[in-house]
Image (cartoon, rainbow, N blue to C red; front, side, top):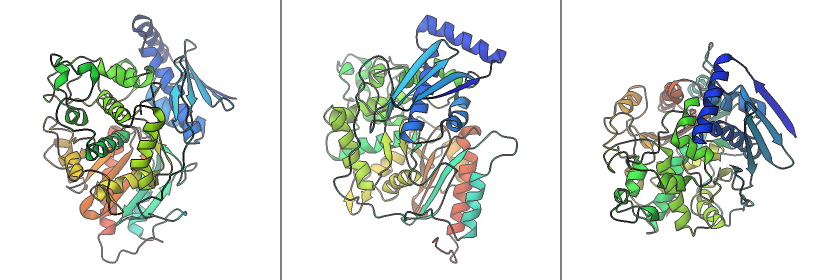
Length: 473
């Protein structure tokens, strides 16, 4: 058993903890979010990823909980594969490791566990590298990695943990921070939404789901229910109109947001989301919220047969195994639904393999995994979002959205698109350049370290374009 206490009894933190307690007393949710967040993320970091706990807490958890991060105490029970976290000695949370299902907060009910199964068939995707880290010979690529891992002299920290650059199907450069290797699972946060979008696409190809027409949510089946008009397309594009808070920005105030309460204080996350009322008519308002994706995740579970084991087998058989994603864990909530909005851990190489599926228009080894046209559909701009550039599960640089135009001006190819997470996790896919770039870390820099990622992409494109480019060993 290992204990760690990080107390910083600053007056501001105490005031926030007090405010959180009153919120918890009155509403029964918000203060628990911080403790549940800490226990769950620490459990996953230790037992799913094998990361050093004190460093992970300091770099990835405490900044997200500031200014109450210093009031959290966590305790790791290696024998029971569990982590307990307490907030200011008042709120207590325990998360449990469940093997192939990852970690989940113990809400006082039986939590299922599952052993990881080996793939039944070889992957369709050819190898993208050998077992050694690929060190670039090209000085331009080496310089790009140097800049990607450089820390600002005065902060805020960037904490880059892994960068993988794939060109024309092979890794040409990669680098990892101390304590991280080619097989280390790292959290993708909202990049998980892009994986959920791919799984929906597979079910569309199998004619088990359709993006148009009422979404298959039993609670909305009454035609008189205004939510009956919500489609899978609305959920993928964040235009459902559901009032489930927002998931675009994350900090300590997120504990008061329904979206965070769903992710970190609910046994059944999709059940919470389906009870949300409408804030706007479906298809009229863009609002990025995890609840939309959790409803999609339950549709995946239901279409796979409803049982946890069947859902796990579907995800791996139809996607992970075919891509050779041997170090990927999609976590499940206490109700047996994948946490498809935020909780997938995978190695940087596996995230790159996922990117290659979209670079190759949904084809792998001559087999169509995604429906024809799905990649175009996923990266087609959502009309209701004219600022960020969001498609159907991916951020896109196509169209005229303001930040998309800024990304292109900063050096990202105009046809590129990306999966993106809240702490600077990225899979950037640039079809015309035959390029996939993965960046993972725990960035505290503004807007998920987007400026550094734009620079990384621009540097990489410039290094790979010259005719005299020398392949990496």
